[in-house]
Image 1 (cartoon, rainbow, N blue to C red):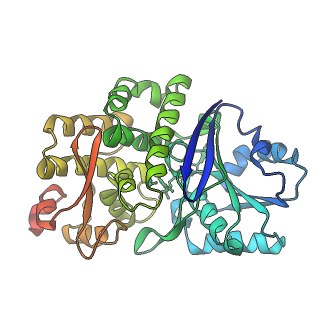
Image 2 (image 1 turned 60 degrees about the horizontal axis):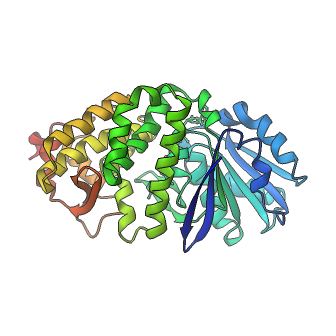
Image 3 (image 1 turned 90 degrees about the horizontal axis):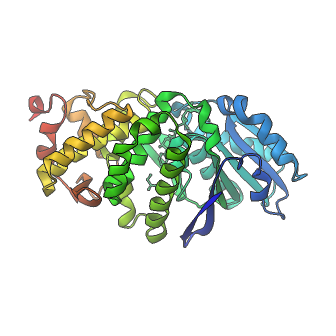
Length: 360
Ligand code: NAD
Ligand code: GLY
């Protein structure tokens, strides 16, 4: 097992990475917990419900078990309320410990429920997608979507522990693997050029879920994310670099309807656009932008942006938590492995978007 430590003002906790962590889940439940509430979805429950129940039975604690509907389109207030209903129906007190068992959708919602229930109860992240293992389970961002904008309602709320068992990735559809790899390669682009080189060299092994390649990718991604969030938990500056490609990506997700493109796919395509914008705005070597596009394609994510209509892109990108006033702020790369955040006028972005010249 490998451990990565996260240290933020909002909490200090370990990320445990290793095969067998699912079976050892009881270790992460604090002794004084009065009950455990597992929040998962119907897909993950069918695959891992039985082993997780068996692992948690070792604690001898009462269990609330909730299976939400699967999908980004269910990352809503209604699903959140189902979690509160289940906790209240079982009369769970402040010492209940929530367990988020699933991908980023379940993790973000269960974390937000933990932040709100009785003004805050403890929770453990048990991420079961590659994307959640390398990104969403770490750092304490929790949220639901609003029809007008992605992740617009939420809280910063750190888990007690993150338990990552790479063995569960064996059942993940190939498209979800590709989406998770988008967040892996992001870390190389924004903070670690040698890791980007390594990803280029190991893309086939990563897509094939080779044990050693995936273990290293998860570990390095968690280390890089832990470094960033430990310096800037609440995104007052540095943390925004983790949103590279997300300004465009979130617009794609909400513009096409949640769930049409996977989050990682939208981020992958968004990183291609952000790299092209970086060439125009902050001198990124065009050859690096080409490498970024080639790697996004190689992991199996789309590189061709959808046509949302030129004005609609900006309408959507104006609903972004990084923005100040009406200026859209983008994460840009002056060089591979280095990121910055700056406002860019719409007129300079427009030509990069599908049919952008029509609206200019
Ligand atoms: P997801 O949670 O929808 O999971 C993807 C699909 O895989 C779902 O159908 C799920 O049921 C299924 N699944 C999960 N584990 C599986 C397994 N082991 N085997 C087979 N199928 C499995 O999507 P995601 O990509 O994990 O997460 C995307 C979400 O994460 C988005 O809502 C995004 O906004 C959020 N996110 C949050 C952060 C953060 O810092 N909090 C960071 C990145 C993304
Ligand atoms: N995924 C972006 C962040 O955690 O800040």
